[in-house]
Amino acid sequence: MAKSKVNALVAQSGGPTCVINSSVCGVIAEAKKSKKIGKILAAYRGILGVLKEEIFDISKEKSSAIEQLKKTPSAALASCRYKLKSQNGAQSDFQRVIDVFKAHEIHYFFYAGGNDSMDTADKINKLAAQEGYELVCIGIPKTIDNDLAFTDHCPGYGSAAKYVATSAMEAGRDNESLSTYEQCTIIEVMGRNAGWIAAASGLAAREPQDAPHLIYMPEAKFTFEKLIADVKEVYKEFGRVFIVAGEGLKDQNGNFIAAETQGLGKDAFGNATFSGAAEVFKNIIQKELGIKVFCNKLGSQQRCSMHFASLTDVNEAFMCGKAAVKAAMAGVNGKMITLVREKDAGYKCGTGLADLKDVANGEKKVPGEFINEKGNHITNACRRYISPLIKGEAPVTIGKDGLPVYVRLAKKWEDKKLARYI
Image (cartoon, rainbow, N blue to C red; front, side):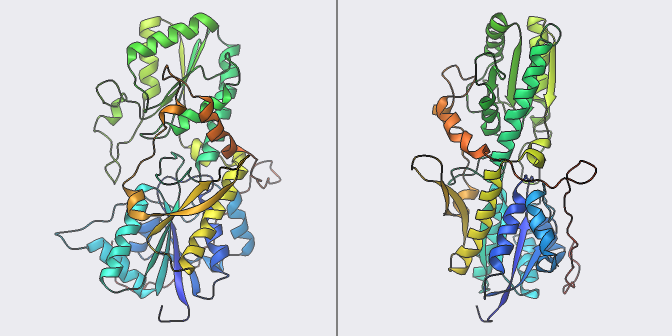
């Protein structure tokens, strides 16, 4: 870089998690040590905030507020689902990003997000290189879906797994106590095309009678005939049934089973929006078997329940944020930080690197060895993979009213230097 000190920008994108703010804390902690970085800036609402030039100096926040971010869920910088657009072949949105970076002397870009975010960072990085603008782009992994390729697991997944497994355990006891009335309970979980979150619920089943009895993941072959046969078998044995259904389930023809996903709902990146798998199950089970079914859709609680977040998850997210800055300071560019599980006895995790473009084009599914032969539950290998990720309870500050205290940043806005864009 030409100047002794230049500015860095950190931003968050996509569905928030319990620990994405911990990654931001890691970026700030390490960036403050650097002699190469001047201001540590943040974009409000991810890449959309860059386009709007809504940028604030996060290094001016109180140190107590920054520390409290580790105990605060969701995206403190605010997030977005926005796909940068090209118009008539011109790199319109992409060019605007570079122009904003130039105007604010931003030469380091740290982007916390999933596949689409890594694709965005990669394309921005390549355009900067084409224009001869010195820019270092480092991705920080984030997703409760745990479907990013090239990383053992993703920050955010451990806390979601802990919450879902606990929810299944508790709702399972409710199902057991009311089995003469609500004979079947179904929980629908997030995860898109991957069954990692559904698989995590299997940790709750320590004994055969424990919920969940049946787990359906998108990676396993599924038919409604199989569902009815499975339910009959479990009901005959226990007099009740507890099911966990992944939102991205498909039928034998490869179609999503929930009506909303039949091309009716798409996000900015063209990904299907999912909803209704549990209701589909409910209607079929009640019609075919005549038993009463109760549905739970956990929704956004899976990604924002800080009150029972995994301490391992919090610490690893912080580690990823620090590793991103360390990599940038060492001259690394165009990479995403990965989590690398060491093969020693016990559990130990470090960081590695993967190309942004490779992560953008990859998707990690639940492997076959993690799914039982019947395709309706997890294996011990899956338990061994997930169990270390949910260990420990993240500390949460409790107020005098008995409820958690979550921080909201003050946001010292930077002056806008360019004409309004959108």
